[in-house]
Length: 218
Image (cartoon, rainbow, N blue to C red; front, side):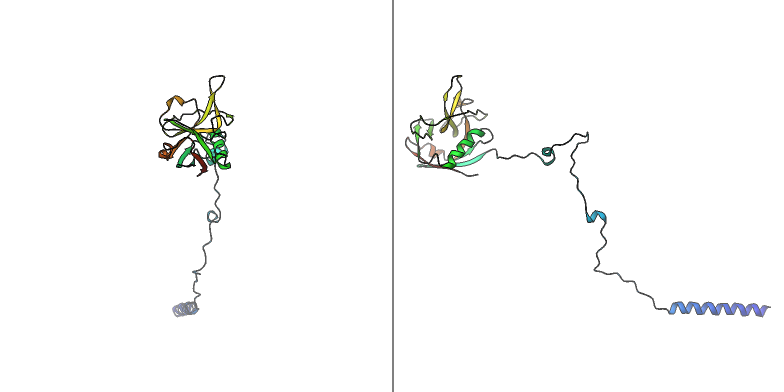
């Protein structure tokens, strides 16, 4: 009985040894990773939606202006050069504060209206020109636009006359440049610009000197 048990145990050991050797003898399949393959993108990497909020936390609907910010269709100021027979006068025009006047001035300037007209009035404190008649009688009426700008040295204004209600009615053609502070004009005449360069030319202007042209710079 003992010999039989020993024989069985030896036989089982031999069988197990043969099975183990067979498995170890089979060739192993190597693992392979393609170094050129792109990783599978996550949904976020494929497409990411960005939502612009259209309401506030209290459910107030935002207007398009509030969402994208305010839009200013026109600059607050424009720049121009008044070319004269004595030299160039550079000015800034207050488009935001005197829009009707500046628009009218630009239209006349770009159309050549002022080309060849005289400075018909020259005093110690002011020069005035742009009259198509050349004597202070030409031009038509237009609204006066008073604003916060004071008449200081170099200020541009539109000529005008007193209406029935004692308020100034502006001329649409004749403009003036003050050579010194003129506070008595404040809040009565349209102040639509300021000289930025060329006050030496302003001070040289005499009656009969010519406006060669007015060129818009921006």
